[in-house]
Image (cartoon, rainbow, N blue to C red; front, side):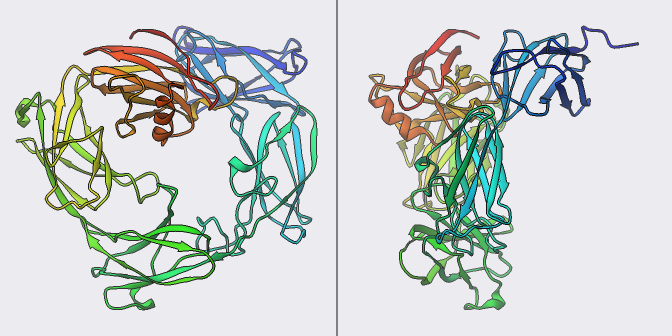
Length: 537
């Protein structure tokens, strides 16, 4: 017996030429899910297609027709899936629920072409070089140069940053400087994407004769020795640019037999371009972590030898959790809470996390901490709970940032959990096509006094999901400033500065146990957010 329409879903629609708005015949419409594999249909003379009797689930949809590509757009239809159908780089992602029958309009467009050559600093062609065109709205398109240093990229209409890089068979594949000395270069010949010039491509129109010369700045190596290594410890030497909190490059240091004093190993970095770097060593043996203090090194015009990195074991920090101003016991608590500490500096993303669970008296001991700053989190909180207050050595903290820069020894934490927590959620959209929705972040600040009085140390961030939805849980009742920004996390300082200027945010008041909906628009540096549709969930 065939499945009933109430238990299944279906998709129909019209495929059109986005330039002429006329229907396109003989387009192959393909849908894919793990449950069904590939299913499809062809459009008729009216550009119509229909794919019935689909199980509920998440599908990828793409279109195939010679001389055309799917034009990435966003469709919004009330009542379809979660309300937002999201498309990027020629593929539509669609969440279908049982009984749903969305009718889509899917535009196709004649692609454009970017072609040209990649050259070295002398004007000679570079063979086998990676060339990438990237756009905020349609993602990445890449290729490699041929035997004459030529490249040809087929891209949707739009504005693209063009870049090229030459990475050889280096033992350090993550370094921005290959063993050839070349660095990733953006058109028309700069190091950073923000300094590059976008190439605009129209439907069916070629952009030819583009020349990109790779940059080869001077590069030097840093070498030295790691000491204080316990027997059997595998150690890594890591470094990061001083202006980038979470960037790091690392490799496993040479074995004891390669040189160095007893309990030590020697190391040598790959080529690094001129700049300031923080070097450190780290490793783990059983349950104990080891780390050296950071050593700041400026690379300018020569190799840097003799760097000494001394490993030391991490320290333990004790603390306690109270509920509504009293110490709790496991018997009166619905869940044993865990305290997580994530370092702010010195690591690449994702950052490592150390954690500890409270005992029956609400006490805990967090192991393997080093001097530095940490973000603190407590879980699993009940829906109506929030972190009301954090004290370090008797002093109240701003937000969840725990500063242990002066050392971990003798540090004590007190965490107070409050009840009647609030929530805020909503839909995020981007004006025009400036930002891809899933690379947006919503930033939230508690207000103190005037709306512009915010502290970036109290900043909360959540990424916007693929459906354009954000959700904050476990919030203290009170007034907040909220903003949606293009990009990933790490936007607190920039957003706080703009809020202090009175731009780019909305105010919202959260009452105890309240669940508020606040819809937002992603803003760029010229526009302010707009919010609407505040209501109760």
